[in-house]
Image 1: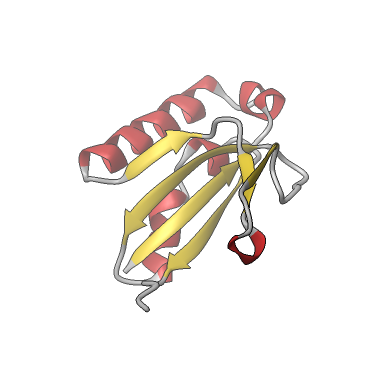
Image 2: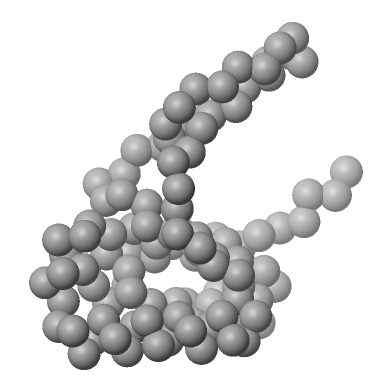
Length: 110
């Protein structure tokens, strides 16, 4: 199964986390990357609309708002949501007072 993960966190919370904990979290990310996980830091989003296929409009900024800023995304493969949770539990957002969402990615075949 594939999962999309979204990491949220504040820089100040990251900075107050013990350096050894942060270092291990980054090493954990490196191990995930080495195992084939695709991950990256979130850039500035845009919203795209094309209602009724009548013309595309683009607006800067996120559609969804959250208490914490989005820090990054990853696409992981795991046997279950429980395994996916174990995979992300050691990442910087999870250990540095942030949160990581795990979303099952279902095929959109039509």
